[in-house]
Length: 154
Image: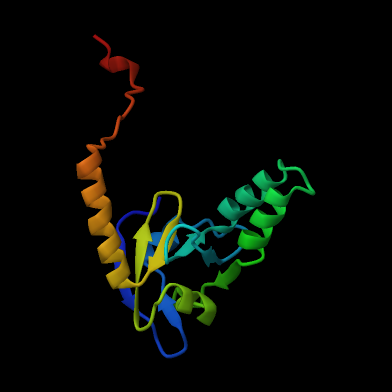
């Protein structure tokens, strides 16, 4: 599970350390790294482990093979994805196209999102986080946690 947020520097070769907590949560059974692609909702980079990306690709097989929707999604997500291998120090090298897309220059913020994480420009993320918190308050959103422990029944 990917939790919290971390901001790290990017070196002059576009390398950045992936937070140790995140690296521990990544299943490296099939690939020692992550899969990244442009977010379609945010000015950020989406990051998944290989198995999560495989599940997404497999779910696309449920769409009509020749449908426009399948073509659009597979072209937009799968062909625009990058496999980034961890080096010996736990770093990845971010492609210039993705750095430009997310407006990331010298620093990047890793943002935990449960089963995935994102990489943002730190200032862009701070603005989004304030907006998200404001939306939660304005909409009076809350979480409902189902208690599955039968011992708590009275």
